[in-house]
Image 1 (spheres, helix red, strand yellow):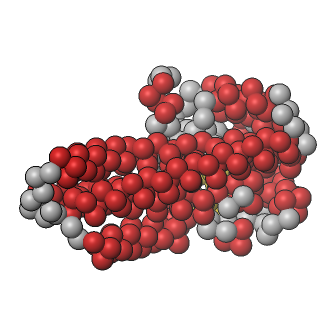
Image 2 (cartoon, rainbow, N blue to C red):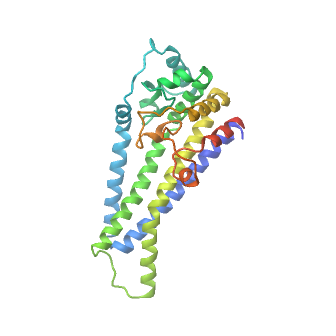
Image 3 (spheres, rainbow, N blue to C red):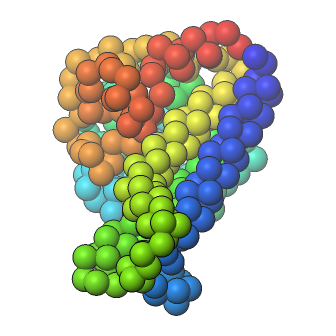
Length: 295
């Protein structure tokens, strides 16, 4: 695929995944009404709670992540090439220059955060600056710049809201069902079938919602790869950087399960398996490199 075809393809796939999300919410909402008898009032209340939690994370996640990671602001005096590269790429991308932060860690990695281009941050480890050449570093920075330009933090917030609504409603269904809520007096065959279907949806919907959320995350990584390659016009730089980062054996001390999804390469080393790939926030590195080198 060309740069433009790859970008367009990943955007379409993201829209399709969100369509599945909405279908999941409709299904779990129907289950909610069948099993609890709470009506639309309970549904609205549960949805509001999920949205409040998600948006609180959305507005304060950047400062929380920087504090957890022990990041500090980068200065032009100390890292002139890094600052100049980010400035040049932001001009090329047509967005305001993000703030730049450093993590003192020998493991090479990077992430972007911020709710929009006007409030954005690119954070890199000192190991990334030490172990990558200039073209590889520019590829990584372009990838992170693309996350900002593509509003990926906002996209993942919407995905989190949708998944949160599904999980919260599912939990409420079972609690209210156990506490004796809902209309369970119906003895008709149709009534029993509806209850069984509703219970199955309540059980399976949270799992599917989580899988869809992770799938959205993986598609946005592919999109950022393609957009980053389009920005530098040199996909080999990012492909080579991904290869080096993934092969590096040093653990990233600043990372944990709460922040791992932000990094360009998952800093938590997982064993390769179908289930790990299914529940991973990142696509397989080999697949990302293959797509970049095919552009």
